[in-house]
Image (cartoon, rainbow over all chains, first blue to last red):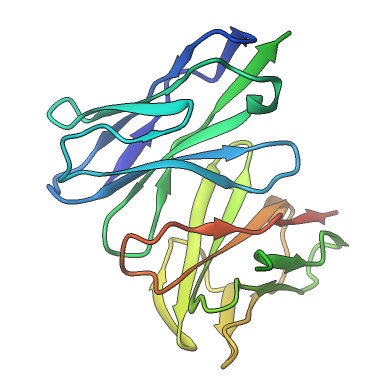
Length: 113
Length: 114
């Protein structure tokens, strides 16, 4: 079974600084997708970034980028120039062709002004 | 384009009762998935519907059921409620599911069972 592990329950970053959230996963598949979702207090899960496993190039979306290490099964999220609005729960997720997206336990990110 | 709409936003029920939650997907999205979110278990997949058919089901008891209508709207039903069913129930839609189109989530329904 595929599992997703986020080892950092909480992280804190100073406004305008950079923070990296960790995620590891376990799978025997070679072609899958990985996602980072953000859940602010409004409760709505918002897609931050996604990565196709067959692509070696790391995905980027403005201030958000990932470090995808397929062999190590690691998928970390880097947030640059952190803003107060980035404060939220961040979930790493794995998806493989069965409509069952597996989520990690989440990392609560606090941004200090 | 309107997002995923879930109703009601909050619900309080008593043990033994049943409850129905509603989800309207983004226009054009045909796949609807349901997730249960609790502090202890995190986000867990309940089931996914596509074209009025349940395509995939998570590891939940038969008290949890759902359906999808021809307009892609979906309902989730929980019968004989237990205290442990208290959770945030999230609905997500995607264009087709079964591909790599990302899930778009609603704001969830907060169910409290007393």
